[in-house]
Amino acid sequence: MSKLFLENAYLDVIASVDDPLREGLKDTPARAAKAFHFLTQGYNKTVKDVVNGALFPSDNSEMIVVQDIELYSLCEHHLLPFIGKCHVAYIPSGKVIGLSKVARIVDVFARRLQIQENLTTQIANAISELTAAEGVAVIIEAKHLCMMMRGVEKQNSSMKTSAMLGAFRDNPATRNEFLSLLKVAS
Image (cartoon, rainbow, N blue to C red):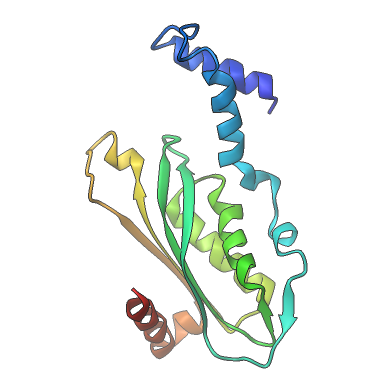
């Protein structure tokens, strides 16, 4: 999508409610277009790009948890933000992924027009495919501005979603260990 096309679209949106040429708004279409490109940059990245080969051999077979990864996404239904945190766990089977790469994988999918349910599953599937882990677990907790600013206007509501693959789905003890580790660190 061209920059000019997006700027013109924002100009039309603003013109539907206010004078787009007034002082405070005259540069808004360009700023909004730039912000939208930034907020949706996940479309221009792949998991392979952001991991950049940072998979390392390891004899570790114990659970690895990366907790409280900040995430920002746009609801595909209203183009309003949802903001929260993501917790990722996996049980390696011969290789581990660089720590920062877990957060980068979250961002690849979060920086797209998205619903939280799909985001959770996409992250879990990507880490599973990348690492061939014995199991992967992802939990996302987020506040949705589409529910807070409009519609039912519930300011204190949040949504939690989970995706449990492999050992986390099949073994209740593994799943419970992950959940208890999240509580201990809170």
